[in-house]
Image 1 (cartoon, chains in turn purple, green):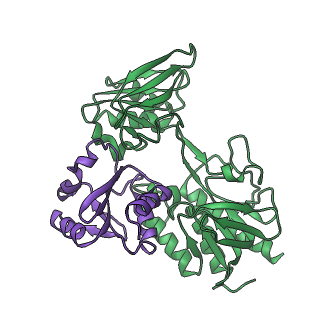
Image 2: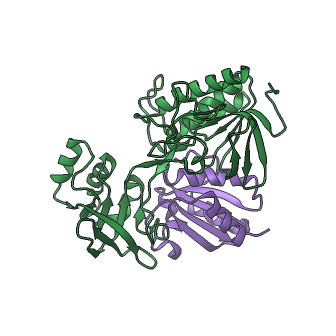
Length: 114
Length: 312
């Protein structure tokens, strides 16, 4: 279970619904570990500011998270969290492991400009 | 003293850092009805938030670092402390009577006293390729990423307890683990060294350091330099885990407050720094033991000392 204040995605079906019903979506797929928690914290901080982006998380060990673990964009990833940015249902950017606030902002600003 | 619910940009005390020391200081200060702003460059909770389980915090049998951080943050806010997380402090003036902080977003805050509780972070090697290949073969957390290396050959860098214990734990996944360490001996406790040496999957490359991480989309090799001979060789590997200790987050304080040779802030028993009205607490100060409980104690002392300073 992910103890965050983000929207939790519990199933592949819910994942599909969210990325298709929202233009801009960021999904952090991880565990409650030292590389993941800072990224959840950054997303929680940015939720207020980036109202045009839907911020979600998904538990890495949930079997349903195959929808993220099997993406071609994460083929070389060997560090959690896998953070996926979707625009109109398509992956536009993916990162592996811990990220800084500046790195997340840079992606949000370039991929999801208002 | 100003109103506890100050809505301007001047505060009685600004706390720099939102780990256990900073949050504790925030609880004590705001409960004493001092207007308090906590400026935090990371996630509230600091290193504590990253701890899977805390079982030695008195009064609490077992709690995750995330949950304890969350409670401390709420406690500080409930007494009136304002917390701004994930900010970037671009400029600060600690030497004037009124201290000031300018953030990257242009906001400027001032205060009559300051508590520095900037904490520490994992040390990185800082060599070419490290940041680019982070999460693509370069890792700092065995429990997070170990399973990506099942059946593979990996390198662990470091010679302390974390490095040796994590190397042993990584043998659950990896077929071969090579420990690279800069000295000819380990700093780890004897039992950790013994366990690593007795593990048939672990080999050692001593008196050596990594000079480069190589690979396009993922790590495929590292360059290892022998520190005695100067020889550099290419070493094929699927992944690398780095455990080379912690550094205090005090780079931006250099030249402002007195630091020791390790970059830690020098403090008195009352957590006073070399500047009047500036106190320090937590993992950024010079001390021997680094625990949540010690940081909480120092945060308490710093807050009480700052309160006394403000009363004159």
